[in-house]
Amino acid sequence: MNKAIVGTKSMVVSPHYLASAAGNTILERGGNAFDAAVAVSACLAVVYPHMTGLGGDSFWLTYNTKDQEVQAYNGSGRTGSKVNRDHYQGRDSIPFRGIESVITVPGMVDSWDAVLKKHGKLTLAEVLEPAIEYAQSGFPFSNDQHENTVKCADLLREDADTRAVFLPNNQVLKKDEKFVQENLANTLKTLALKGRDEFYKGELADLIVSSLQEKGGLLTKEDFADHKGNWSEPLSTTYRGYKMYQVPPNSQGFTGLMALNILENFDLASIPHGSYEYYHLLVESLKRSFQDRNQFLTDPDFHTIPIDKLISKSYAVEMAEGISFQAAKDISTQSVGSDTAHAAVVDEEGNAVSFIQSLYFEFGSGIVAGNTGVIMQNRGSFFSLDPTNVNCLEPRKRTFHTLMPAMAFKDGKPHVLYGTQGGEGQPQTQTVMITRMLDYGMNPQQAISDPRFVWGRTWGNPTQELKIESRVPVEVTDQLAKAGHVVNRVAEIDGIMGHANAILIDDQGFLHGGVDPRSDGAVVGR
Image (tube, rainbow, N blue to C red; front, side, top):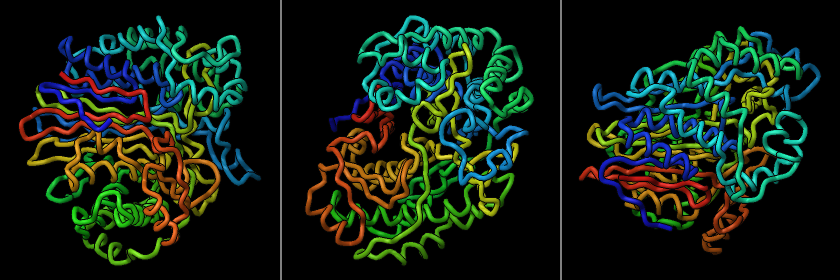
């Protein structure tokens, strides 16, 4: 479980083996890392439909050897022009599920077009071929999809279009039973033929919007037509001599940089890995970054976020000085969804992509748009209805977003591409993974497979619970509890920890890949 796959030319990692294989196929056909990444993204929308889909968002970090620049693409959608707090008058919060949670335009399809136009060699039609094949001909129903379908069966039955797709004959498919999505295959074929604008301005957009409106939805054709993602400069800091990159707000990526800045004030390598001090220090560093995230994160077009201060080394020193090795800090928590899919690709030329996509909760809103096969995200349900909250619901606004693909550079070149599923757990698992690789010398597979934790809630009841896998010795968790952590020893290998992936490029140029044993993922290296 701890041995990394090593490639000499290229590598693909994703949380589903068929998506990883599809990315490798595109590389073998002459595509580059960007072509392969879009193919992986589209395949995940088909073979991991409980985690991601065309009705969701995505964020991308790209490195092109031609310009030797790291760039970020924000593929998240804004609320509709008719979406406002008055619609939810008398309620404390936006419903997590159902049509009233479908209030943001999906951004992922736009991101495919943007990445291919800027960096790709192949056409959208070419890179969509594997996804179309999986949707049309079917694929084995995965363990993870089966577990989540059983868990969400009541939700999936509520909408007739959703039930028809995910509960054929009103039944949960058995593991490895063939799962076919004919409507989604037709939608992908239409995109392959007509391109990105068909999803936002064409007949497909009409079908999606009309279906949502028939169900009581607030999004309009104009909302779809106006959607546009954007390229930007990523955020960065340094850690132990490495340059660390994250996508900027409305992503929570800066929390990962803040945690590393805090940890840099401690000699982590001198602290035994897996000890009480190790877990306590990581949790306490992350909690401090969460406090600022919860206070400031939203759409930067609507509210100023003091990013320069938050990711400054001087601010990290202040926060580090407040950490006690004897006691846990008490901070407020908030609900952050858990369904996501991260993947990464490196090609023979050294081009690199780290990206992540999501529907927010498992199966998103639970609403499929008519006969398109597209399940819609519930990302907008994270908006606050409190007008004093920076992330309050307003028209044409992007919400606080959990998605945060990451990269670490060494001597100006990609060294580690990493990311994970898991909402609140994303910055936590990322920090665990990268410190294990950079401070403790672990390969990506060991860094991912070793016991992990997740503090706070992903979604559900508010809690400051520290869930920690029971492979961690009891004496360590007892000491954490004594320090004030609300410890919950979960399964030895528990899916609540999320599905992480990583590629590490060593000094010889070899690629070391790791995928999560908690997922259905695979490393494919050449």
